[in-house]
Image 1 (tube, chains in turn brown, red):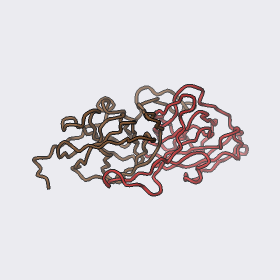
Image 2 (cartoon, rainbow over the protein chains, first blue to last red):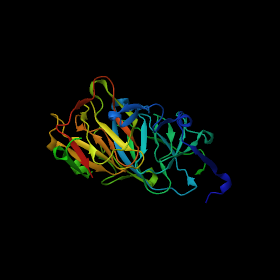
Image 3 (spheres, helix red, strand yellow):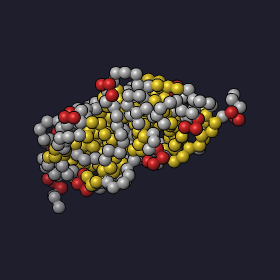
Image 4 (spheres, chains in turn blue, green):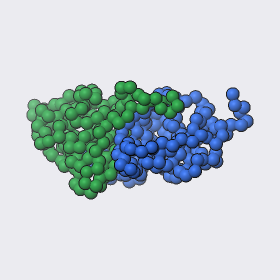
Length: 168
Length: 168
């Protein structure tokens, strides 16, 4: 049991395009939509910076299932994908949490940010952005994952700089 | 007003991997998931055939919003993308309908199939699959779209072979 006083607590902020911009993109309708589908719909084009071609990579679609975390969430490690972007779109309309830090050197605790994401928002991590594995909150949460597949080592992990918990 | 007797009625079937295989892929957890995220999740890898590189294409992420249709749904046209696959994942957990026909010559009415998709299922149309624009049912439905962007003409449209309605 780690004494509470040595834990660094990270509070979540709402996921917005602006706040998340240093780390990646928010996948949700925004701005002016162009009319499509014979007037029965609108389209917000090219909302995310997809980057999957490095070293012979290709775009792929997978699904991940995340078991819900208990609050406060004790973070485990941070990871990054040096060869591609990685996007997640929730499949169950469930809210979830992402924890990120800027690309570059392994993050100091002051670099960490936690975002509470609505169930109708996806996220796209830019290539190299440090991030915690996805954090489901209330029940099992499936995500469609749009990512790079291909040769090369595309996952670096780093320990956290100290014990960190996330709370709502 | 078209007399009811000249309408061809298409009934929906549930979206399953097997039934949809001639047209594309279902994006939903299935089969054995490999353990990820320090035991807090599983991964079903590479569920969809992503095909976006033709003629200098790249992968892109957009969002579309669909206005709900009234039942029975009067179909408007079919379209296909000759240069790439196109995937949709619902962002609101809403059910929806897709109408498809095999790649190749413009579809006869017997070629058409309608699928009722749950809100936790996405679809990936293979390159060239004929499909109706997405059909929301109960309320506005946003979809994350994972598609090809790039040079070239990537949308062909064809009229329906007769008046067609879809009913549940």
